[in-house]
Amino acid sequence: MIDTCKVPASVDDEDHVKTGTELKTNELGQCEPSSREGTTSDDIATLIHVSDSCSGYFPSYWKKEQWLEKIKEHEWLVVGKGDIGCRACKSAGTLGPLKSQGLKLSREWIECRVSCFSDTDEKKRQSVRKKIFDHKTNIAHKRSLEICEAAKKEQIEIATARQESAYQENTCRVFRTEYTLAKLNRPFTDLPVLLNLQSENGLDVGRVLQSDHSCADITDHIAKSMRRKLVESVISEDLKIGFMIDKSTTVSKKASLVICMKVVFPKSDEASSMFFVLVQLADTTASTILDTFRQALYDNGFTREFLSRNFVSFATDGACNMLGRKSGVATLLQEMFPDIIVWHCSNHRLELAVSDVVEELSLELQKRSTTLMRAHKLIEEKCLVFESVSKRPGEHFLISQQAVRSGEFKGVALQKGRMTAIDHTRFYNCLSIKMEQQMLTTRSSHRAFGQSKQDEDKTKYQDLLKHMEVFDKSKWPRDPDICFGDESIRHLCAFFRISQAQGAVSGFREYVSDMSDEDDKVPERLKQLLDVLKTLIISTAECERSFSAMNDILTNIRNSLSLENTSKLIF
Image 1 (tube, rainbow, N blue to C red):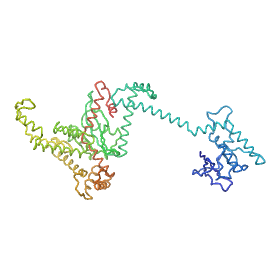
Image 2 (image 1 turned 45 degrees about the vertical axis):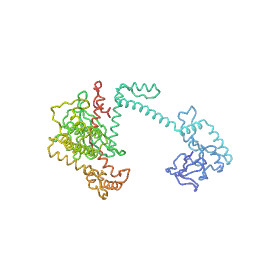
Image 3 (image 1 turned 90 degrees about the horizontal axis):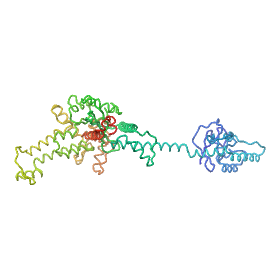
Image 4 (image 1 turned 135 degrees about the vertical axis):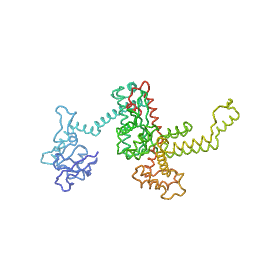
């Protein structure tokens, strides 16, 4: 055990250390200097242990060896200015709850003022020995030793920490139970039943109010906390984000707007698409939808300044109030944020183009991890397949031709109808052209937009893809120049308002120089730009998933829930 003792501010012995120097004494009674300063001569009782380094500072009537033996026997002995005292009584200060009638600590021992008055050193030592023995056997001194031992164990702090830990664990059990109920779409009235079951099984669930109202309050708290942490994380990391919206009607005929978000978090290599909030619409006009969408973002912590800098992508379906040329939501939104990329949901466009002919492509576009480059490549491949099939009939077409010639298909006689046979070559050529018109642009072709707007969207799409192709290793030259792709990287950084353009260029050069690296590791300086490209929204499938979750919650027998509470349950 190491004790701290302070050398007085003024001493007669010149061999002593400087004023205010602090010493530490170990088990052997050796003093060690400490760095703490500030001790003054006004201290009532300046206490030190006698040791080799302060050998002259002990009662003059004791020899050094005798005093060292004495303090080894009685560790609580201290000396100050020639008199002795008790370190235990000094530390305790008061007996507190251990105090009883007529029992108190000695001020002389506390303030190190125990002295002796005799004419010889032997008599002085004898007097001090008696005082030490009497103090050692004193009940008040023993109580002070108990207090010091208890203080070492920090019993109060440990008990408080245990109590707080138990309280938090009990609260967590209740919160986890409620969260499970919310995710399983169970009624809030199940909470008291489940908590009683846990209590019967021996778990302490605390003294939280167990009712459906408290369950609703806990749901509200969890949802708000999770959404707040999500927004704070996005803002603190200054991440680029994209939003997708869609409108629908609940089972109780309420117009609702679902807002989903897409973002790439720093510790992730893939973009995360997630439900953000569900809000009620006063009506379905474009201005109302825009105001509701904007207010929902502001209410949840986003600011106009942050969105102007980091809002890069917006996607929705092809309804006229969403993508209208003059007053659609996307058009009004671009007036506020001119640099955002507006995207007509690829799955909606695919349905408009070829219905359910290409279900496989539709499923690929619905994946959360699908990027713009990946979607473009899949669509191009499908168009090439259509062109190829128009020239080289597939297996099933040949089977159908054979059945027509034989007049029988799988044992069933075929009758000649009045319908004119479809020219499969023209059919697949038209299918390919329709796919290109609808899919290879930021928005679906529509006469209401006008030819100039169609050309603008197509040019914007092709320009973006041209610069993004520098990340496609299959299109790199065999021996790329050191400045290969610099122009495209700078263009993309300027387009998406990335300040560290030169760093991204240097990162891309490093990326190109390591093209033989099998790990395909992306340099840190290039990661921000790649994350932005992953944030571009291809499909609003996440909105459809959110509507499915809403319909699972708002059933015919549960349609009294407000959209605000429904939003919290989905989140």
